[in-house]
Length: 265
Image (cartoon, rainbow, N blue to C red; front, side):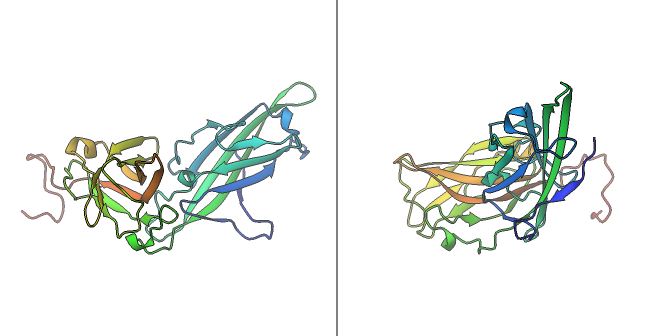
């Protein structure tokens, strides 16, 4: 069943723009085939798919996800629907740095009409995620309220050791000590990967991410990622967020394969 795409607008009529990495909220009402608002108790199922554009990847694992009273979805008795999207729901996955990205929230709901026949409704809401404009340097970090925005690239099949992939503190990070730990999470189209990071304490604290060639070999395309530290007090602080792209190596070519166009003989 096809459905029209609705561009989300504010009450003033302005097109909705969502800041990358920030939470947001969609509110609406469900209606039946005659346009009559459905009361909340009549909704029998409610499912969400969140994706980039019409054919892009699924975001944050939200693929045909049950949201009836779960994962940010709720329906009031009068039929008002609310969908709360988290910071990880509003990440930019495919757009070039500095460019906006179109996201779709596709919602399907079911109910039973007065004659007892099962019915299905669809809505496809479009909104625009805009990139953060803060200067991606450590000086923007203020104890977890503003974090570094840092995009980087890895080559599949390469090893990354030492400080090959690392982030440095300018003194505005939360206080790290010998009891602090750090982890890095990658969120892709259908994959979530978590790595242990290394904290090096000194005049300038550094968090680094070692990756083996076996670990980078399984990466594909774009991921949203963040770096989280757990302090000795038990507090969790996110200090870096951004995107990482896994690109193919151009040198791992079988000896009996022809050289690619433009390669040296």
